[in-house]
Length: 515
Image (cartoon, rainbow, N blue to C red; front, side, top):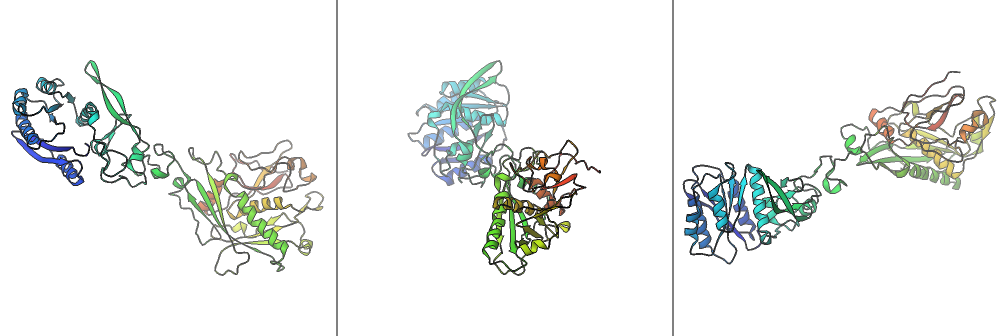
């Protein structure tokens, strides 16, 4: 119905009854009254169609306008010849088209067919309630030029469609609220969700014959009645595929209590497919050298190393750990640097930067880092990280100590690896036999050089072949925060097991060699 159109409701059983007088389509209150009167209808009594037609025609005549006049006669088909009565009531006024809908009963009904034919209308058979809606759609298609395009809530969908229903390509018919722009409160108005409509030819099988008619077919982006059409936990206006269920990290871990308190030195949040690392750090120096240019430089490298190597594209979920369907996994780093701040009652990772020659002279042999509290790791516990500008290595065979000064780029990578331990990740171990090295499927590799700088007696050929130096498996991090337990650590043995200083998840258990 369009602006200026009017409609009424007449019932009939043993006699005719005007249930709702003419209501104007331009008046929202009147249209609500009309809709309410239809909702209250229920079958009773006989089928005196003459009485119903008499009341309908008289009411149309007493409310005469220049509008085209139509009667839709909906009944169960148990009627006698109504043509003479219709013509008698209508003879002194301009013609009123009558569309007849036979609900149930026999498909063929001569009185209703004749009435529709002689008044310029059409006859429809509806076997059930769904077919009744289809019949009204067919009537709508027969009068396409008269479709009311009034859109009182400005949602892009004419009120006629929202009330009567919108036919989808699969044949389903849905309705929406004509009085509010967004029926389901998902942030999209009904027009955005139901999409554009086209007039298409539709076929329907009737007995041995196929009839064709034209109807409005909508191509929906989402269901205007549902906030989350596909039920995947993502509201339609935030869902890239609102008709296809999407699995996200947030949904996957919704029922798993990730033990991550915002007061902790390291805590994580999950938003859609993004893992957010919230990290509190404070760089310190045992010699009180925090204000020197060198200290400030390396403190800056600590921050940049974490940001570069724990962010976005450098991290992933292992292809065999995350469930199928989770895509575009990302990470985000948010660092709160307390290095130059006097903090109390704050949990943070204390990063000790050992930069002086004196401190090196007191060390027998060290890897770049030690984390004293790692064996007791819990998400709620702080840990200390000790970083060396010039790490020392002790040859396992000769006892010779070898020192190598890290470049700034190498230093950042070492920092990134060591922060993996703050997330509960243990060092991954390559298991080495005479001719074989087991490697995980998922890895982050450093080409051309090895940060660990293992010398010839520690398998130099292997070292120059892309040594991994930090973790890239988000699933392991989430698992650590879920279980409150660090990932399994495989210790070295006589140089045959090399601590490659990276954590990734094996798709099978490593082989431990005893030699």
